[in-house]
Length: 98
Image (cartoon, rainbow, N blue to C red; front, top):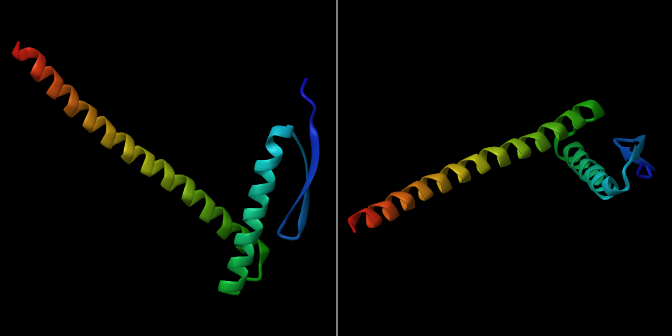
């Protein structure tokens, strides 16, 4: 069994103790740092004082980025599929001439 790592992350003035795989540490620390930075930005720009509101806004921001990447990826996949179909038709039309 792999060795677990105990870390503490601070988010919105609260400390969260976690037991994780060592391979997760960097990603979790970066995520916590990004949340902290975005929360401060929301607090400064929108005069939001309730931490729950700030964290909800952060969650919405990050979730929308993930969703948009999925949408963009699907559009990219659709475009590639259409191009491949067109290429397939072109190749087949050239092969069937002979």
